[in-house]
Image (cartoon, rainbow, N blue to C red; front, top):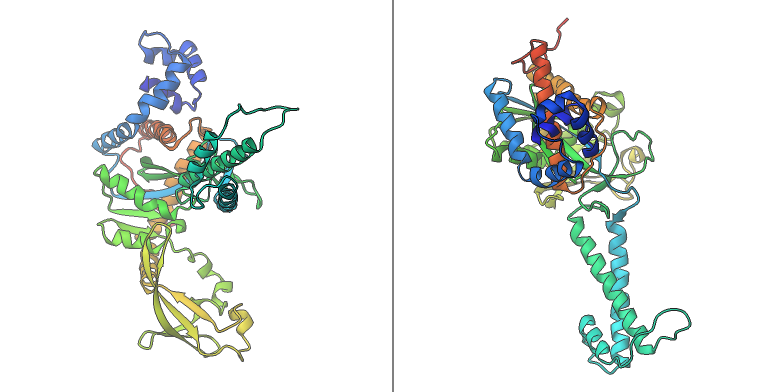
Length: 455
């Protein structure tokens, strides 16, 4: 069954019904079946979503290990990139955290007021909990509840139904908050999916769609690491991705990633392991423009005195350090930030160009991050860094291009993080086998990097 699914993914066939049809009509699938009867689409779907999900990751890393045995993978240069792929969920099944929090607070207030009113009405203790009050009210029922048109509900029935409705909503909103897990949205159809912009949506006001953030690690044009997350940002995915590789005994010499992965937390992580990182600073492209160089509001364009720990703006005013504080990121990482403030901006003729604040110009600076960014900039602009960045754009982005365009994989068929991971791991294995076959046919086996043409 695994051979059938793997070959189907190599051919760009993902539907269990189409795979079933191919097993009945295609000679290649018949040869793989080795004389056994073609499985039904139910058997194919159950195997993929239930049995394969328990061992897909292990099978994938066995394939990576086999590739390493062939000399195709050397665990030297890893290129990491991510993309968004749409989930198998309704586009209008969204639940937003901000709205849920607002409605939850409103419902809790109504429930509190209702409990207080009913306690006074039925002479119950004022500090009674809503659930216990409901039990006591149900104990007072002597006649069956009525429903439908033309039937008049008793006052007790209306009070009980009001309390039941408010408790039901409270339970619903509590369940929603547990599902969010730090996210700002999820889909009712697939709770593990987060609403995000897809890479294919180029319009400015494109609709948010439920999807997953897929991370690939590529070496020698082979996919050697896969991660499926519900995080919209790439920043928070890099450390779990690297830790997953290390848990499988894989340690790379260096890792190359684009500007979307830059953060102090990620830089600090690579300082603790032997892997060297080549992460492009987020301001790298902008820093080469004239607009960036002429922007007097930017900290980078201010003179800094390390001895006095102060900046001098282009109006020759001093921006001095006031105090040092702590900031905590979404992942819980704590960083040290120095807060600076100008002595007096009130009479400065450049104030409108420098800041929109009513008071003086202020800066928040992480000295550790500035040093890490400078070191990373030096690495990526070195001859090795330039070669690695060129290969990242070819290899990791190329892998996503092949899967989306050539294989036609634009949306998941399964639901839930575990099943979606199985689906993408199966696709990654198919990609690696196809890539190995292609390199054998073109006599390119053993090659790791594309060399920049000096001409």
